[in-house]
Length: 206
Ligand code: OGA
Ligand code: MN
Image (cartoon, rainbow, N blue to C red; front, side, top):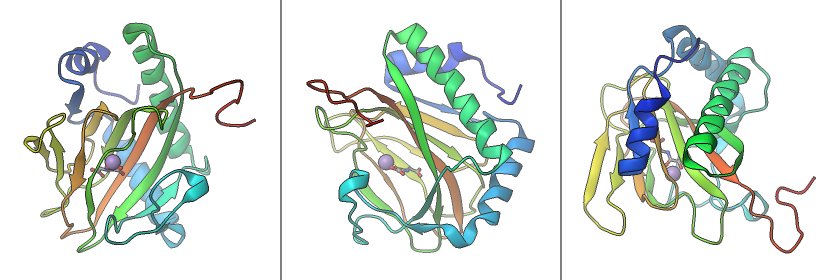
């Protein structure tokens, strides 16, 4: 097994709080393979956009990280996706939701990069249900993830990125931000999605 946590832990936390923070979620070897993969594809990271893929905008006042969407080009990516698929099945069985897919990208923040307060999904406009973030390294300083209380300006929790820590939260409920990085910071941000098809239009299109 590549995971080091039991589903009871995150199911319970998600049901009561809407989010969970799991330290040492994956075996060290897999975290190492993922960071090695990041270094391999380093030249292919590109400035992240905001919004859906078809109306992608790049606005450096909102976010400055660079991303690389998984393309299945390494065993590490395939293994990570398989783990997320099994979490998806567990969430569907226990929370009675119809998550149908998981999408994710590597993200790289270098000194001064940030992602201002935002919500990953807007009710009725998106099909992102749960956000996941896995940290691949442990910056000495900076790049903290700040999660705000739902519908409030108060901070719920500040998470210091640590290699192997997995964060999951309800995408529609929690505004969050990434404070400016000081040291390089590598992570995988991902989203469990439900089918948003309306009036016979299949989303995503086949
Ligand atoms: C995102 C995001 C948080 C983090 O990519 O949408 O909010 O801690 N990432 O990297
Ligand atoms: Mn986000």
